[in-house]
Image (spheres, rainbow, N blue to C red):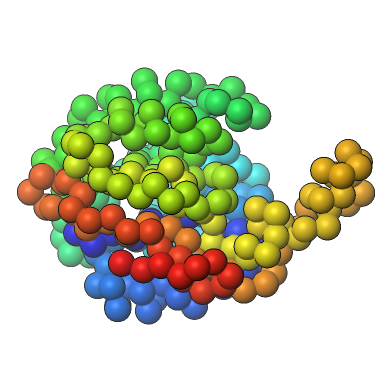
Length: 270
């Protein structure tokens, strides 16, 4: 399968980039399945039902969330109705929605998508992601019930993301990090056939401080004093993520490529 994963959508700029580029990329790259992290799509904090529809209508087959999963209160109800959205499996025991789901791709093949939250440097204490993911991987063998398995690791520390990549090696098709809004340059196929990237980056305006207008974050760094709320930057966004081509029989990643389309970053495509 030809799979595209796009990193954290940041505000209006990110939503616009998805709407403008994704329909064309689905056609030109002959994509079989697309996952988009919508964590910051609504004013930089969470995802609303309205904006979720925008991303899905643009061509996303699945939306993942993160630690801001329910910052937009309507998502508490919307996620129960819209099965194409998943929240982290270890978010909270009573959280609405599901942390993983087996999807039927338009090509007829099955794709398992799951998301976990890391623990290192995160503001909240979440359950252990490794023990949370273990029973799901055991019950969904790669190349068996699922022709491809995608793991979104939403956390701060690259070390924790790398550990998860190696933990899932041989069992997942792709392990990709989200949350830091900065794309890393370590796209690779691990020894067990799992594609890996520490962070997909954001779909947002990179003339910013991780997607926010520069003035307020810089003021706080320089003076230690807040003056106003953070607001998402509104310049042209770069679509950032990763492309992976998988083997249907084994679920292994055959090829992995970084993706950067539009905006200020150096361009990259499969």
